[in-house]
Length: 342
Image 1 (cartoon, rainbow, N blue to C red):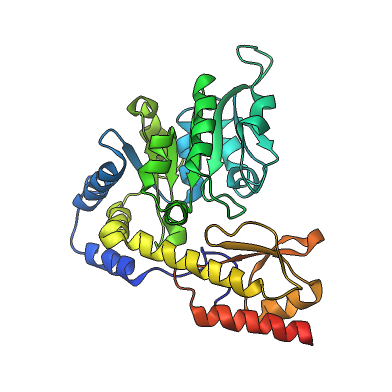
Image 2 (image 1 turned 120 degrees about the vertical axis):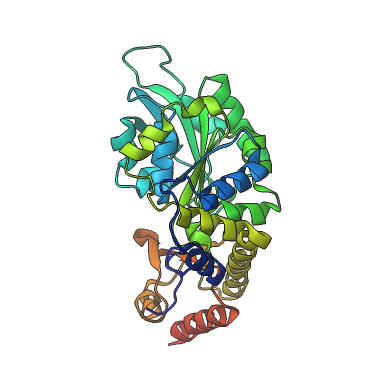
């Protein structure tokens, strides 16, 4: 398959992470997390987020979100999220099925929630006829490629805690956000009041495996049982731990995310020179959203595969990855110019 701009999920595994998997593939170790690789990876997370942080590895992002949300909710609760959120649009109803909770979608601005936008859902507390709001869930980076600033996260966390609720962050592209903000992970998560974090690596050079972080140990009373029951417990967990160790070694996560962000910025800058292309969202991480003349979309996809975002508007989403090259950006832009001329 030719490289394209469809998704950072389509990229391969970073060679250092693939090598770490190979190096861990020696002999026998105890399964289900009682191995040196997993335990060292957990310690690495604690170094970055604080010693009281509880870490649970899972297979994928949907599993991370479901485990995090299931751990702090009952079926009579509701979860407030953006209508573009992954848990609302792209997880096949898994959060609702496994938590039993009602999702309350909100129309976001540039992909973001604000205290004002969710205020109308903060009602019915202690009223038995109404689902009980329990979690505000945000994505960092958002599905529109934008990044929450720390003050925006603090405002949502304060609102959640004021109403005896939790703030969950879907961090599938957390590394891209950290690079965009020029901050350590902890500065814009735990320090801003996030309670539960889905920490992603798959979109940034890992093979598979995400982590769910809880910043309050009191929240994990049933988490280990929920993880097993929801089929997210690795047996050969050492290969998850080994990947995260390589991911953090020499800030590989930062190199990968920084490169993908830079490639998106280069793409944006080159597209800005083409009057027929209209960029629709701020380019703050590794995604570019643009309205494209519909007649060039099909031939453009033949060479560089990507997804439509809004067919009615002829809006596309172009994602860059850790292995995107400058040459591919220029080739893509030149093809756009050529197709527009013809």
